[in-house]
Length: 276
Image (cartoon, rainbow, N blue to C red):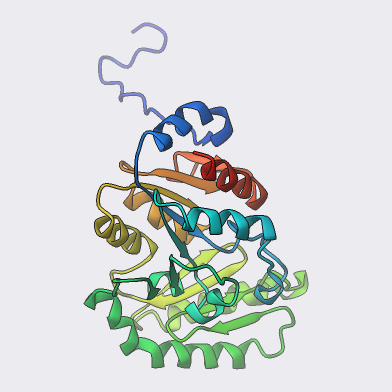
């Protein structure tokens, strides 16, 4: 055989399409958005619309983002949805914008005109007590670990460890592993995000399912999806072949087609979208 030959049995080369920076492809993206009459803009909150802070309570939604969202919500061409892992009540505390769809708890809570969660999403209500009980067990276990923040959001649970010290990191990882193993039979899903573990009901409903639900409600609209974390990948995958999918932060492991560098970059994108 010649150099590099494998006797005709070589595997086909895998074609990897790298995620592309929005502004490098803006002329063609702008044309695609402008040429479509109706748009469905689905945007994550933390890390996307707002910069991630040390704690969820310290997050601030910049005035520039609010103004752009307000203008988009008033446009007859756009339907705007803000989707978050926060509880719906907590998410709404950042907004006073009408004509916007708000979804909390990764899509398990929904507020929007003529919108109602399907039955499979409502099953989460039955698992609320288990989420609470797991939260109590975690609070007891991590009571002596400074920097761990546990959020019980009724339908879901968040274990934040952004502010944990190095000396407690190993213990935290070991305990999370123990919890996941000990309660593996519970109908709950553990998902690791940016310095947070998200625990939610094991049902066929997530941000991806919600995004599909919205695209069916607003059939014919071009979906534009923007998010920054693992739970947003569910939306990117669900709408891979029909939407403009944008990740905040570069990653070739993402299912998104494009990326923006930061929440500030997102604000610029929203501002440009207002002008289309």
